[in-house]
Structures are given as C-alpha cells and as structure tokens.
Amino acid sequence: MKTSRILMAASALAMSATGALADFNLTVLHTNDFHARFEPISKYDSGCSAEDNTEGKCFGGSARLVTAVEAARARAENSILVDGGDQFQGTLFYTYYKGKLAAEMMNNMGYDAMTVGNHEFDDGPEVLRGFMDALDFPVLMSNADFSDEPLLAGKLQKSTVLNVNGTLVGLIGLTPQDTDELASPGKNVSFSDPSEAVQQQVDALTGAGVGIIVVLSHSGYNTDQEVAANTTGVDIIVGGHSNTYLSNTSDRAKGPYPTMVGDTAIVQAYAYGKFLGELNATFDDAGNLISASGEPLVMDGTVTQDAGTVARIAEAAEPLDEIRNKVVASTAAAINGERDSCRAVECEMGNLIADAMVARVADQGVTIAIQNGGGIRASIDAGEVTMGEVLTVLPFQNSLATMQLTGANVIAALENGVSQVEDGKGRFAQVSGLRFTWDISVAPNEGRVTEVLVSDGGNWVPIDPDAVYGVVTNNFMRSGGDGYKVFAAEGINAYDYGPGLEDVVADYMAAGGAYTPYTDGRISQK
Image (cartoon, rainbow, N blue to C red; front, side):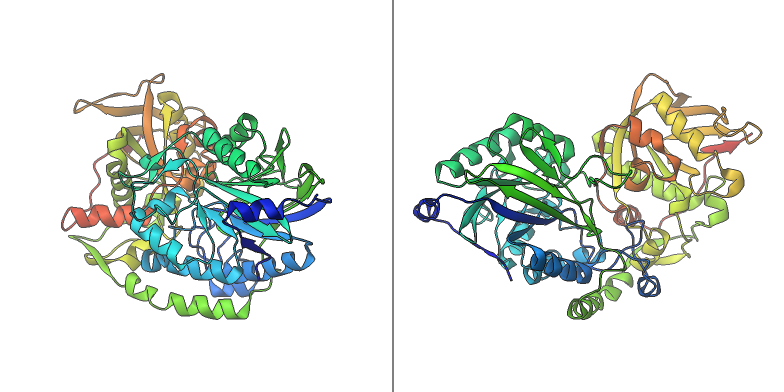
C-alpha cells in the first residue's frame, strides 16, 4: 500500500508544516524508461524465453518489480515510489493496450507519481489522457504550457505534494524540451526551459511550507546535472530519458549513485525494469539533505516473481497472437535474410531494413543508414507478410537511433563492420545512402575499406572525411554494440529512442505495395 497521500490545498500544506522536523529518513524507490517490458527480458533487453526465465537467465518484468518494491518498502522507515517517464512504447503490449496495462501495473504497485516522458506523447494527448484517467496517482510536467490543450488542462499537473508520515514532500515533473520534435504532443502544447520551470515550482512549493523537493526528470543525465547546478532548493532528481546506469560498484556505470551536484542528489536506474532504484536519504530538522546513499537493485533471477502478476501478464499476452498473425504487407519474392549472407555480403533483407530506416528519418536530414547484419535473424517468404514474420526478422525490440558523424567516423564505422567477417560476426554493416568497397586481404582495422561513395545530386561521389552526415542506426549499435564504439564516442546530437525498428520496416513495406527484394551493388569486395 502507498505510504503517502496527495494534499492539494495550500492551507493544508501550511498546517502540516507548522511543526519542526526531526531528522527524517526517506527511501525513494524509482524506475524509468520501462517501455512496456511487462514480461522478463534478456541481458540484451529483448524478449526472454520461458525456458531461460526458469533457468534464471532473465531480468525484470512486472512480477519481479512487485516483489522487490514490497521488500524495499518493508525495510524502509518512510518510502515513496516514483517513475521518471516513458512507460509507453517498446513492445506489442503497448501496441495493443496503449497505456491501459501500464496503468494497471503501476496502480497495483502503488506508485505515488510519475513524470511525462516524450513517448507518453507518441499517440498524442488523447492516449496520454486515457492513461492518466486510469491512474490512482498524478502525472507531472512543469516545463510546458498545456493550458490550451483541453485533454490535459485541469488533469496534468506541474507539481504535487505528498504527506509522508507527516512530512511534506514536493514532487515536480520535467519532460524533454524538444518533445515536440520527438513525439506528437500536438499544436496546443509548448515546452520551455527546464531549469526555469523547476525553479518556479520550487519557489511555489517552499513558499507553501514544503521542505523536501524531488524532481522527476525525463530529461537525461546531462540535463539533470545542469538543472541541479542552475536551481536552488532541489534535494533529489530522479532521472530518465538517457537510460543511464548509475552505480557505486559497476565499472559499466556512467557515474556514481547518487551523482551529487552541489547539495542535489541525482539518480537514474537504467531502463526496461532491469533495476529498481533505491535511494536512502536523510534530512535534518530544517529539511536539508544531509546524506544520500543507495544502489540500483538488479531484477535478476534471484528475485522471486509475484505469482498473481505472472498470471495477469500471461493473460494479457494472449491477444498479442492476433497482432503477430496480422498481415502488414506483401512481397513479390522471398527476401533473403540468411545469416551467412547478411554477415558477409550485401543482402536483400539488409537493403530493405536500411532503406526503411533512411526513409523514416529523411525529413530530419539523415541520408545514411548502417544496420548490423547480426540484427537480421530470418528471411521472409514470398506473398503476404505478417507482423510475426517481421518480428522474427527483427526480434530485439531495437529503436531507431540518429546522430551526425563526420565522414571519417563513417569510414571508421564501416571498418569495424568488416573487421570480423572471417568469423561470421554480426557487426557486418548493411547500408543505405552510401556505397563501399572493402578488401579482405587487408588486415582488420588497417584499411580494409578502400572506397566509400555518397550520393550528391544523383551522382556518387567520394565521402568527405571532414563533412558531417546525418546517420541512422539502431539503439544497440548507437550505444557501442557490435564494436561500433565510434557511434557512442563520436556521435553528435545522438538520439536513441525513435520508433521500433520492426514497425519502421513494416510501415515501409506497407506503403509501397508488393515489395520487390533486390541488391544493387552498394557493397562490393575486392
């Protein structure tokens, strides 16, 4: 059960704040970027089989979170449970249920509040409003003007106040300032500077007698640090959006948990329900943060799954077979996506996927796509194409990721792509928007790529090492997967959370009538 209740009236705030605070211990339990991962996931953040789950090889899932939250509450003196946004999008559960199943699971776990993530706007204000109507707790967004959007005005809040065993805790929501470019909030919602919005809410809350301030920020780790530096009065920032893993024990962490900026403690718990964040904070009698410690708790096979939640998710999964069997396109001939082809040479499925990627983001100035051959897992037979077939080809629930790269870094990425062809590794690059030639007689990463051409006014010209190009890939590769470290290290204006790759391919095929698979010599070998 929740340990808090929402207080709305300023008079109630003032009355509750009249007594002096003794040292107050508060445990902040938090999640972020769950992306509809109600079922357990693999170590690669994709689907995990029942057999692997039984063997303890899977992570996350709502049933593990239920158990972990209950245990964390039992050991805490005072606790709240909050979310850093992006419950929406990522699996067929969202495609089918939109926000309904997320609302059900969050209500059952007793969340106290969440902020709006950019993906909460993927289907416009209408779906967000339906989600909020189903929740037992408030959804927050301070850095936006939504007063002219009737579906949000009067329902969505900029901040709220919890009474946690007699102590007031103010919560403020933040959403990416560029959400209008990332999702579909509609013309009636405009976004503003996060630091200014937070400070305005902090001043209002502290003026009403609230002593502890927690920001729920779906803005990314870097922005959270900027907000902490640019504001006063914020005690804790619970982050999201950048899928950042913070830890005091792992060498894979982006920073310590919590990351301290001045007197503000910043936390984030990666994504997909793989971790439950647990921050233990102590405040003095004036409401100042005097200590903060903790660690994200991994939701691995040692965490028992709640039986009732397992049964409910299994029930909710049954209708998804209808989607898996849905005909989404057709193809005039079989599309070759065989492992031996797509990890060594230009393959038909690689061209389809890469072309679809570029087409989806061409209006953003993106001209080049690079997709790893190892991410292509099957061929498709001629005739009708079902969503299940598309998901078999692309089972990893990857999303589109965009960035800008210099020509030199594009060449470096292609060098990585051909560096382990002899071993059949999955990093081999399937491409669109460029042509390249490589020489297997050259040692790996020593100049195997001998020529790279890009389109210029309908002609193919040598890539300019100093020029900057718009590039699209998948989020796994963009974060350095399959050896593409150049993407993680050198990508400019990177964004990893676009639409699902399987949906991009299905939409592309559907838009063009019966698809005709092809190769055109875009990859050649000396």
